[in-house]
Amino acid sequence: MAVLVLAEHDNASLKPSTLNTIAAAARIGGDIVVLVAGSACENAAQAAAQAAGVAKVLLADAPQLENQLAENVAAQVLAVAAGDTAADGYSHILAPATAFGKNVLPRVAAKLDVAQVSDIIGVESADTFTRPIYAGNAIATVQSADPVKVITVRTTGFDAVETGGKLAPVDPVAAVADSGKSSYVGSEIARSDRPELTAARVVVSGGRGMGSAENFKMLEPLADRLGAALGASRAAVDAGYAPNDWQVGQTGKIVAPQLYVAIGISGAIQHLAGMKDSKVIVAINKDEEAPIFGVADYGIVGDLFTIVPELVEKLG
Image (cartoon, rainbow, N blue to C red; front, side):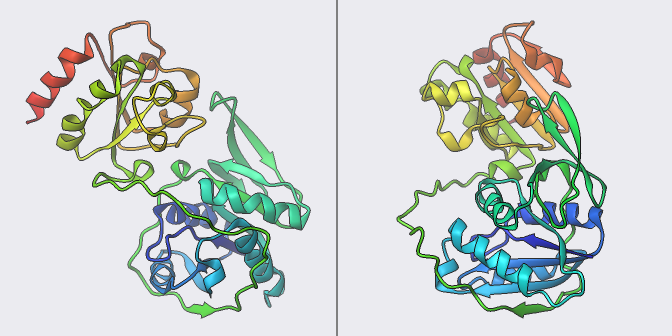
């Protein structure tokens, strides 16, 4: 039995989500093979080769894979799976449940005519997995009888594997031709000196209670003191207080940092689904009945416009 992990990367470096996905693959068992598909992505492949538990890295390097269009990357996954010379081929194909993985793997599953198992947070056995449903309020146990299990992995459900160990071999594979079904037009990439939201050890998030985009800036000194990423509830994003890529929740990013500080966030079920697995949760809200206090480890009831500056001063 062999497990194929589709690596998420930016061509220059490996994304942390890949290491979490490799951890899920290790729970399944069997040889772990990582596919790195991109252009001039040798460094990302070398980083994948250093991940604990990886038996081999396959490198598909070509200009048509540079922007990782779903049609091309899915075709590359299928070509690798079909061309495998192992006796049993790949029993599982995994990718992180990020925008990247959610873009590619449904196409792979459809082409293989199998049912995708999405957003798993646990591995019971090689064919049985757990995943959250109803915004995380219930956990479903799913058993797949498909010959190939196509799975996306919620990265917060698995601790990343260690890196820097024995180097696995990196084997080049033939790249697929451009499908011609889509083309890359452009992208706007947010640049920030702060940690990436989904990989940060500390996250400071603001909600509708911040009142305005101007008021939202008062969270920056607190984030600076804590070395934190900045997040926001959907209500704050919809109100224009914060950019879309800061959104935490069921329809935003799923985070599980060591410390999550929720400020002016009531704690709607959709927001809780995106952060309730955080190790320590601190909530600041003037409403003592706010649902956020139901999941918080520490809660402060009061005016955030008084408490946050005081907190920054104490941390200073």
